[in-house]
Image (cartoon, rainbow, N blue to C red; front, side, top):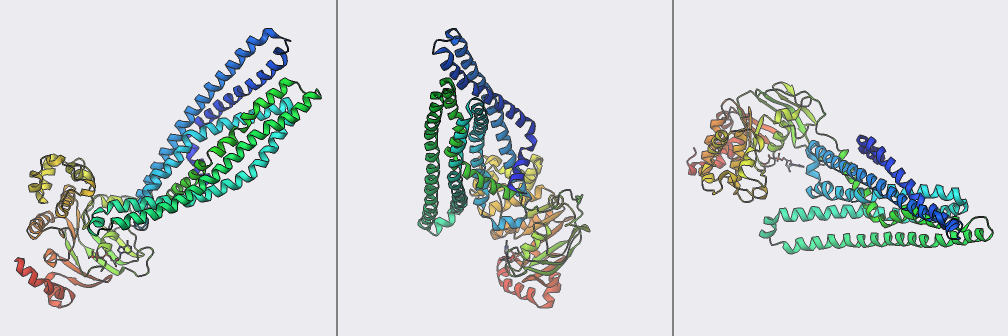
Length: 579
Ligand SMILES: Nc1ncnc2c1ncn2[C@@H]1O[C@H](COP(=O)(O)OP(=O)(O)OP(=O)(O)O)[C@@H](O)[C@H]1O
C-alpha cells in the first residue's frame, strides 16, 4: 500500500469525528474573519464621526467574534488531538501486533534497537506533530482560506498580491523542505542505528566488562553521535533559512498591500476602512505558511518516521490468518524430506531430513555442533518454513494449520532461557497463568528449584532482574524447566536443557525429566549422549543430513559416528559413574 493510502486507512475509523473537526474549524474560521471587517467599519463610520453611536455595537461584535473563534477552535483542537492520540495508539499497536506475527527471519536480520526505535521514537515523532502542529494547521488553513475569500470580496487586487507573494515563496520553500526531508530520512536511520548500538552495548554489559571494551564502546558511540550531529545541524540550519524566508515575506506583504491599497484610497477606489481590513487579514493568510516554516523540521522528521512504521505494517506474516487449529495434540510427529536454508545464506542447513516419532516416544538428536539440530526443532515448531518437505503433527500438515495451536501444546526448554524482569512467580506462570499454588510447588520440586527457592527471603516474589541476571545459568534453566512442566504438554522438547547444570543437579533434573516423559512425545537434543541412551530412537545429524539412526545399542553396534562420539565421552562418563 502507498503511504497515502495507508494514512487514509488510519483515519478511516474516525471519519465522523473528523467531519465534526472540520465543522468546528469552518465555524472558527468564519468567526475569525469578522474582526478585520469590523475594524474596517470602525475606521470608515465611527472614527470620522459619521455614526459614533454604533461604536459600542462594533466593539461588542468584535468581542463576540473572538469568543466564537476561541470556542470553536478549542473544540476542534480537543476533538482532533483525541483523534490524533487514537491514531497513534492504533498505529503502535498495529505495528506491535504485526511484529509478533512476522517471520522469525525478520528478528535474525533486524537489530532489536532498530525495532524498538520504530515503536517508540518514530511513533513519538508523529505524535509531536499530531498533538500540536496538525490541529493548528487545519485552523490556520481554513482561517487563511476564509481571509482570502473575504479579501477577494472587499478588494481583490490585495488578494492577488498575496497570491503572488505565496507563489514566490512556495518555490524555494518546497526545495528547502525537500532537502530537510532527505536529511531527516538519513538522520532517522542514523538515530535508530545509534539507539541499536546503545541498547546492544548495555545488554552486553557483562561481555563489555569482561573484555574491558568500555573505551571502544564509547568510541563507537562517539563516532555515531558525531555523524548524526553533523546531519542534525545541517537540517536545523536549512529549516531556519526556510523560516526566515517566510518571515521576510510576511514583513514584505503588508508593505506591498499598503502601497497598492494606499494608491487605491488616493484614487478613491476603496475606503481607508477597506484597506485597514485587508491589512488586518494578512496575518491570517500568512499563518499556514508561517506554521509550515516554523515546524518544517518537525514535519520533515515525522514523514520518514511514518514511513519507517509503515514498513512494519507491510511486513509479511509468519502464517496466513484463519488457518484451522490442530486441536488436542496426541503427539505423532513427522518431518519428511526437510530441506532448509536460512534466509540470506547460500548453504542449506538441513538436507533431506526425515524424522518420524510416534505419540509417547522419546527421540534423541545428537551430532557435532552446527549440524542443524536446533534448526530442525525450529522447523518442527513452525518458526521457519521448510523450502521443501512436510512437517506433520498427528498427520496434519503444519503449513496448512495454525502453528500457534500446536506450539501452545509444546513444552520447550532450550539452551537459552528467557526470563522477564519480574518475580519468580510471574516468570513461572508465564506460560500457564491459571496454574494453582500446588501445581507451582510441584513444578518447582520436579525441576530441582525448591532448595534455591527456600533460601530466598521473598520466595516466589523475588524479582529475578532484567533477563534473569540475578540468577545463575543453572537456576535460570531450572525456571525454564519448571515453566515447561507447568504446561503439562503432550510434546516436550529439550534442547541442551541441562547443559548449564553441574553434574549432581543435572542428574537430579534428568531424573525429573524422565519422570515427566511417560505418555508424552519427547525430543531431546544432547551433546552428552548418556542423556539420550534410553531413547526409542536416536538420530545422528551431521551437516544437515541424518548420518545414522537407531537405538543406543543398534548405533553402538554400527560402530560409526555415534560409536566414536560415545567412546570419546566414555571415559568422561565412567569417571562420573554414569555408565
Ligand atoms: N539465524 C540463522 N541465520 C543463519 N544461519 C544460522 C542461523 N541459525 C543457525 N545458523 C547456522 O545453521 C547451522 C546449524 O545451526 P544449529 O543451531 O541448528 O546447529 P546445532 O546442531 O543445533 O548446533 P549446536 O549443537 O552447537 O547447538 C549452523 O551452521 C549455524 O551457523
